[in-house]
Length: 225
Length: 291
Ligand SMILES: Nc1ncnc2c1ncn2[C@@H]1O[C@H](COP(=O)(O)OP(=O)(O)OP(=O)(O)O)[C@@H](O)[C@H]1O
Ligand SMILES: [Mg+2]
Image (cartoon, rainbow over all chains, first blue to last red; front, top):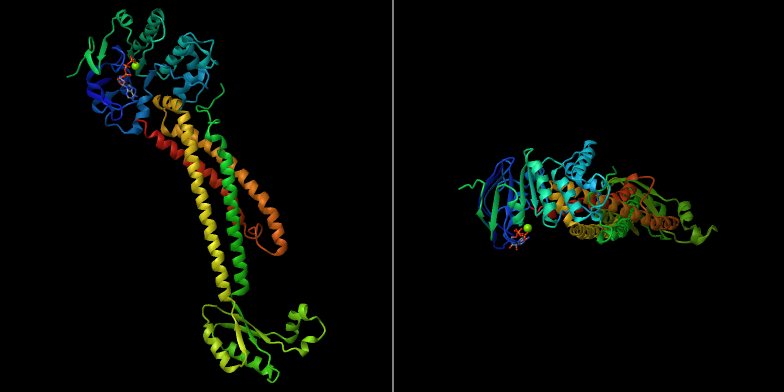
């Protein structure tokens, strides 16, 4: 599903912010990615959602070797990956409903089921009343749930969330993680990045711990040589 | 559910003035092209009037038998290769030509009016005018060839030069238009960078994102181009009517050859096409810098 072998990454000509990262994630697993601020969690997620390419090493995603793939092949791969960005990144000029429907529309599906799908998901995250609202009129927690609905509408094989619990209290954070758990049980591989240790400790899921650009603990996650 | 555009058009920044800039450029390009086409019409008019003909003029000589000189000249001309026909102008015809100056009072009979012979050529290139002039001078005293081709050549040369200038200016206008659209598109791209990045990361192909920019550019190009064409029509039509009174070509003939007029209609279409292709290329290039 996901396989990193001795991966390094740098931004432009800067220093390597990730070094010698090696691990594998099996299909339908749930993992936390934790570590102190600035350790490289977001950078590792960027490799996973193909916003960055590794500067060395081997990254295999969903059966594709990302380091040798042509640029033209990446959009199809990206459509199998759902992302909840740390800052949500909803499109302010579109309604909540259109934001959620966006991934399907981009993939070329203009059918009537798109709307039903989006409505169903928004009801699932408790926003059935706010279909036509603009994202900017929603609270932070509500925006986050819109972002989650958008991330899962295309039934991704890989779901990535960057600090989804960053700006909510522990109770809501806990509920969010439970929401993600519903997904991994349906076969999606889920990776949740967070520096909230107490939250991570409330669950039994495997965790990747990253410190200063290197993996220091991979309890419960298979580590490749 | 109303389908909203995924990218909002950039109505704040550089894009706002783009239709106006395109309108002005289309206006100028249309004027230039119309001028070049009118020059073409004029050249064709001069050429068909003047090539393939010459005039032989025999100076009046009160002591000589002018009719004999005319007859000798006509004989010589008719036996020259490349001459299709030679026809002496009757005194009456010459009198009619001179009527505006001399009046219809028989004054011409007392004046030493030169005799004229209209010569029609088969193919101007075939005839060695220098040799013909030499032979004429030998046989007929006072005969002189009025060959308009040298003058015409210089005129055509000048006209063609002006046409090249117009074409160069149209080309420069096109290049300037490309630059303006590149800058406007880059500004719009920068303004929407966050949205574009999201679209990119959730799997939008480059062509999908570029389509939004190119459609917008096409709409602006069409609007600007048509406005420019309308402006040009408002300028050219009165000018054309005024010039028609003087027999000057300003507009390419709108009726007889439909091609030149259609060419003017192509200019706004070209502006819109340039806008579309430039915006698309600019966006695709910017996107290719994203991994
Ligand atoms: N766009 C970028 N260009 C250059 N350097 C960057 C960029 N983004 C992150 N970095 C650097 O990479 C390192 C890791 O940053 P990253 O954002 O991955 O950390 P993080 O673990 O997500 O931190 P946080 O918990 O605060 O979100 C940091 O040193 C940071 O300065
Ligand atoms: Mg981060």
